[in-house]
Amino acid sequence: MPDPGLFEMMDTARALRVLKPDPVPNALVERLLHAATRASSAGNAQNWAFVVVRDAALRREVGALYRRASDVAAKVYAARDRPPHLTDRQWHGMLVAGAHLYAHMGEAPVLILPCLQPRDLPPADRFPPEVSLADEMTYLDRIRGASIYPAVQNIVLACRALGLGTVITTNHLRLEAEMKALLGIPTAVDTFALMPVGWPVGKPGPLSRKPLAEAAHRDRWGKPWAP
Amino acid sequence: MPDPGLFEMMDTARALRVLKPDPVPNALVERLLHAATRASSAGNAQNWAFVVVRDAALRREVGALYRRASDVAAKVYAARDRPPHLTDRQWHGMLVAGAHLYAHMGEAPVLILPCLQPRDLPPADRFPPEVSLADEMTYLDRIRGASIYPAVQNIVLACRALGLGTVITTNHLRLEAEMKALLGIPTAVDTFALMPVGWPVGKPGPLSRKPLAEAAHRDRWGKPWAP
Image 1 (cartoon, rainbow over the protein chains, first blue to last red):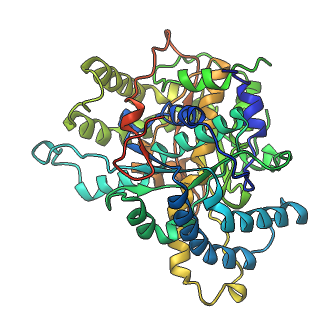
Image 2: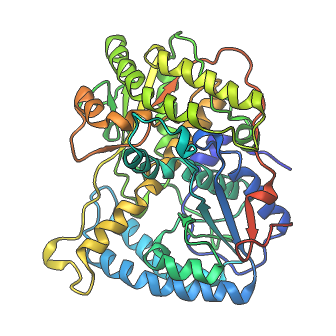
């Protein structure tokens, strides 16, 4: 299998919201899952789970739920001001592509839901008495994303390398209990994204990003990065 | 600059906790920051900020704070059972390397703290009346990790491609207020990781991961993935 350059892939892995319904071979989906599970996770616990929805009827149900969950998102975005770092064209392009995905999520040939199972705590009789259990639970909750979104980014980059398109969406979290019931996901398992995967329509444009000097600080906050 | 293959980099990007104190050129740090900011973020808001600590005295202070914050982590890990998917050697290797990093974080030539500034809400007079502000705040809090850990993973992969080592650590969150005060990070800004970056000691071993069938589900939870 070809292995295109990492930096080129990162520099061109645009969020793609308009995808063809054409099928994606299982071998490519397998490659995405392999990529996801190469990421690190806290304590190498690998508590992740990836629910891959390929069944067409089930995708329609997931899509209908995503559409309903996106109604709120659409209203909030419509009330937002355009961020100053995006042009009118970029901002409206994103809103239009987002609205397209709200209506067509279920038509993407593959839907991936990255999840995390709760991480075990040490056995109660060995839990360090000087550590607060409540503090430890708060801490574990705070760091959860560090054990799943790196895997999600590996899926994004692997899609790019395979010529596939995807985007990290989270609107379904507004109706997460219903989504979990639909897919039989246990109550204790959390979902972190809903990623449509398919062949992109058209030729993706370039990324639009702020200058690095606005994002990076040297030594202390407020001292701009300069190489 | 050479651009090694994406899949090879993902397959070999091991978490590296033992790093040399030797300097890392600014041009390479700049390449890491460029890679980080190619990731996507919710609404392309790019609310991230990367605090890059290079000053040796400041690194020592960050390292001392990390060491103190890691005391709790060390106790919790010592009380944990070895996860069944790791061998004794893998588990103890990770604990020993972790303990090394607890003591030597401040000696890594570069420390990166990925942060997020709070995302603006729509103006109050345009906030959709049918949407609960409290629900929207809860939702935004829930999805924050999706706008920073993809960038973190780009740093991990870019390090691998440049021959550098790094690891995503989070222990400092146990003393986050002190860390933010030390680096002048505003109260409203959250930190998500502390990443040491340096040249690795020794030759990194292979990744250890569970079989894919234990991590992926087909269509519904509990139905194992089979390609």
